[in-house]
Image (cartoon, rainbow, N blue to C red; front, side, top):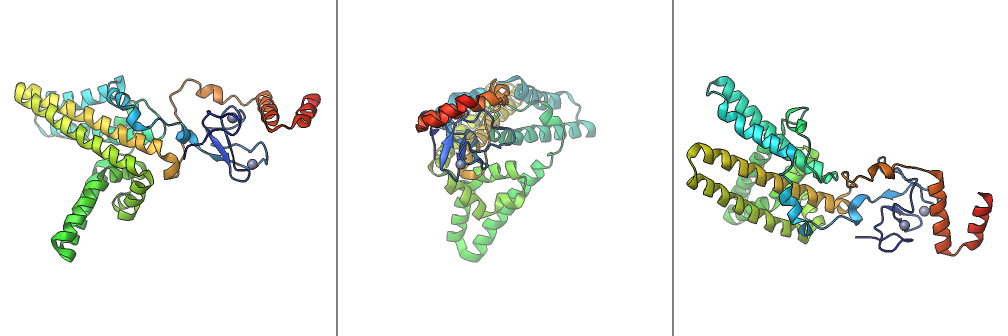
Length: 317
Ligand SMILES: [Zn+2]
Ligand SMILES: [Zn+2]
């Protein structure tokens, strides 16, 4: 559900008071603390629910161009370059093998970080450091565990219910795979990522757009496959493998950015609130000034027709 501000029609609502049933925009709430997601209702002084950018997020099908530009920023290109080119120059001994493996892990860690980074409202890729520092290298093992458990579920379905049930289980696993990746990236819990109830709820909350996204994912995967195929048949093996690796990473980043954006767009339905983090006026929003609160109160009271109240407020001031 998308709501407008009660006092500024056309302005997306950022806050909602459950007691007064009124939506407010940022102009009405200059004293709100968006970082702590805390604001008091100007009418009843009770804490309000933060809506984040849910009410103004552009639907993902309107920003396909932005998805394709996503990997072409300095940070992701550096990560991809390091992780694809360094393994070519290290020697084939044990140390070289370990370096190759660690870099592959770093690349996957960076890719999974893209989902949560985007869902939190960052429309620019995470910094290079994300790939090589901190925790979270276990994401690859967690993802492998998810695949193993899903395979186990399909096998169990086949044993219990024969080919028909197995077919249904395979269909569900294929359909729920993007949802599972989203849950794993956000919650880092294998159990949450394989729980069929969990995945079904996520898919049904998002609704039709999930299937639209699924269509895009299939097209992108096919395009990525075709591009890698072209590279492998038209270039010398060494160059071709590097190029294919590069293409694969780029397309994966686009895919995962899309998954993260779906979470961002449907944050209200999915039960969390985040706002765009990259806009310059973020600092200005922190400006919690008494006079701004006063102006907003005057504005609201005028629009509500409380002229006596406005008069007394002005006199007091
Ligand atoms: Zn407003
Ligand atoms: Zn209220």
